[in-house]
Length: 378
Image (cartoon, rainbow, N blue to C red; front, side):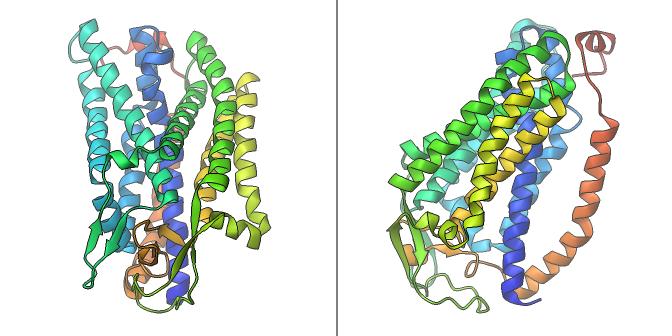
C-alpha cells in the first residue's frame, strides 16, 4: 500500500467519521434543539430527553474521534482550521459544555423556572454547534484567508465576523434545519401520542425545506462562488509540502469533478430525493424508513461536499497556491499506515458495540413511563 493510496484511504475514513457524527449525534442534537418547540409540558420534554439519554454521550465520541483523526492524519489542516476558526471553535465548545450539565442538572431542583432555564441551555447547546458547523463548511467552499511564510509558519488574516457572510449563513441555516429534521424523525421512533404526531407533522415539512435549501446552496455555489483548481502537476507520492503547487481560482471550478465523472451527480440527486422521501415517509407514518431516509440524506450532503472540493481540504483565499489538499497536507506515510491498522482493528469493535447499545435500548417512551420511573430518569 503506497503513500498515495494511504492518503486517499484517510480522506475516505475521515469522511466516514464525519458522516457517523452527523447521523448519530445529529439526531440527539436535533431532539434537544426541539425541546422548546414541540415539547409542550415538562413530562413531554422529559420523554424527549430520555429518548436520547442512553446515546448522546456515546454519539459525541464520533466528533472527538474525527477531530483526533484530523490532528493525526492532516496536522496542517488541523492547525490551519483551529487557528482560522478559533473563536467559532470556542463558541462551539462552550455551547457543547451546556449539554452534559443540562442533562444532569435539569432535574436537580423541582422548580419550573429552574427546568425552563436548563431546557433553553440544552436547546442552545445543540442548535448553536449545528449552525456553526454549517457556517464552517460554507466558508471552506469560499476559501479561508490564510497563508504560510518562508519557514512555513501559518498566518490567518481573517476575522470572526467575516465568517458570517451570506453564503455561509445560508449553509449554516441548512445545517441547523437538517439536524432538527433528523431529530424530529428520530422522535417518531421513540415517542407516542401527541408528541409523535407533532414530530410527524414537523418532519413532513422540514424534509421538503431541507431539499429546497440543498438545491439553493448548490445553485448559489454554481453561479456565485468561484472554485479552486490545481494547475500544476502534483507528486502524490512526495512528502507533504503545501506551498510548491500552483492553484487558480476559476468560476465554476467546484463542478469540474462532476464534468469529469458524471456519475458523481448521483450524490446530490440522491440527497434531494432522500430529504423528500423522509418527508413523505413521515407523512405516511413509516417511521423507520423516514429515519433511514433522513440519515441517507445527511450522508449524501457530506459526500457531495467532499467530492465537490476534492482534492482540496482547506482552500486559501489569500494565497491560492498555499491551499491545503489531501496530497500535500497529510502526516507521514508511516503514521498513516499505523493509523490504518489501528482503524481496521477498532472501528469494527466500536460499530458493533454501538449497534448493540441501540438494540438493547430500543423501544418507545411515553409520559406514563416517565411518571413510573420519575426518580431514575432524567
